Length: 174
Image (cartoon, rainbow, N blue to C red; front, side):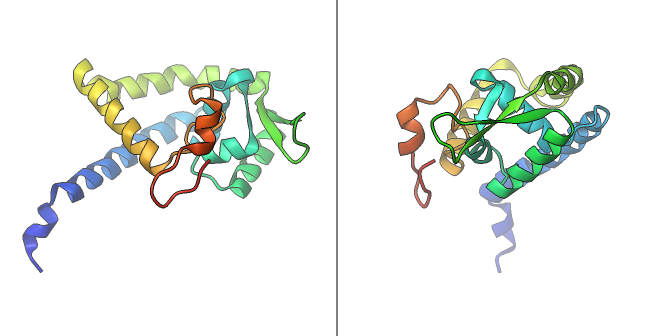
């Protein structure tokens, strides 16, 4: 085996991405734990509050996260028990339900957000000048849309018909 094969910039790029993710995740987990939230719970609350009416269909919430539909159900069950979110019936489809942020969930998010934003500034966005940050955001969106085309399912930034038809090789529509 050629020892220089591991100097391939593709391996370096993915390795750096994993290292950055691991480092940021550790910092975020410590800060969120101070507010009684796991990283997944914070993600769920954030995705819900960034969606119209502070709610998403459970299937859209699963599509936007790295969780399976059963994983979302377990997280929502736990968060509902803790009073952070509630379920509401979907009026147009009796098989579907919405996860909705409660006032207690909004308060918890409001309490944790200032520290979270400070960590993002200190350890991520603040490390880059504005041009580098914009280039990184553009690149990350392009890659995200290729590897996780359902990441915006049910959100207001995707056209309704776009959610259903967006495809990448070896993927299914949202």
